[in-house]
Amino acid sequence: MTDQADYVPPSVWTWNKESGGRFAAINRPIAGATHDKELPVGKHPLQLYSLATPNGVKATVMLEELLALGHAGAEYDAWLIRINEGDQFGSGFVAINPNSKIPALLDRSVDPAVRVFESGSILMYLAEKFGALLPTDGAARAECLSWLFWQMGSAPYLGGGFGHFYAYAPTKIEYAIDRFAMEAKRQLDVLDRRLAESEYLGGSDYTIADIAVWPWYGGMAKGLLYEAGEFLQVHEYTNLQRWADAIGARPAVQRGRMVNRVMGDPASQLRERHDADDFLTQTEDKLNPAAG
Image 1 (cartoon, rainbow, N blue to C red):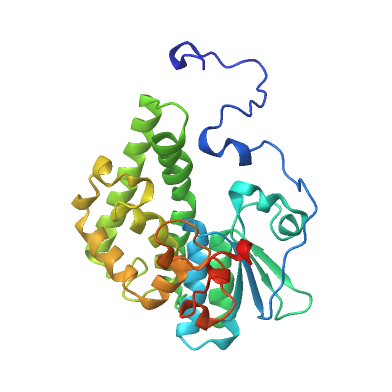
Image 2 (tube, helix red, strand yellow):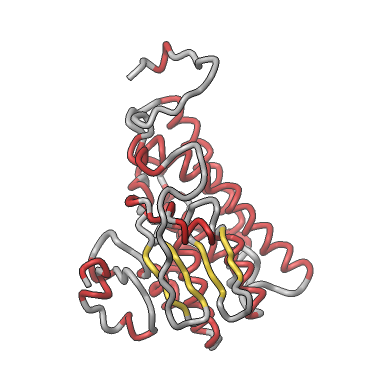
């Protein structure tokens, strides 16, 4: 590998598939499908194709919260998309999300079916469809959406920036880690200051803003994301810690976090979800659909 201190960008960049670190096999500079593969379709109105990354958790938490509120139309099938195996580049998935990123949602309760991609868009779509977890009052709605879009704009610094260079890059680059650690801590401070004055991000009520932010920054606050808690001294953000614990204690959040999960304690995983009772009957075929 070239010494970073001596690196001079070439006149024309070319794709080196060996230089991308842990996720080199799934990153590429072109879009589109790499193979033909139709997506499975279950019996419920909503079909989710996802993985329990922070962005995927947003969607499953939202759906579980809607069901907890009594919205029966939010019943869903959650199909596992194994991004390390390139499932997101199958023709069926690309038809729903041309950007080949999870999560992707297909709403079959309407004709023709509606595709929704990008996690923030999925949250807004479901909130508006069911009239829940998004304020209707002008000021409260604006505050909620501001924090929702803050997360969508900020998370790449936490994931593709700090997370990549701290945890996944093939070499540790001091400048890159320092640059993105500074930005990560600034973002944690932004949240901590907001939560010093407000119970939830949007105000006194729990909203899609909290659902969007918690999987990323709640995970970071509890030292789970990239195992960087000590490095970033996350315990210092006491208001963020309070909020992260409160969100994490919600039963719907705990259920949503399990869905499409393939890492950690097997008891915390429900690799596919097709009925509410799947959480109570985690048989081998549900924990590991590939084994069925």
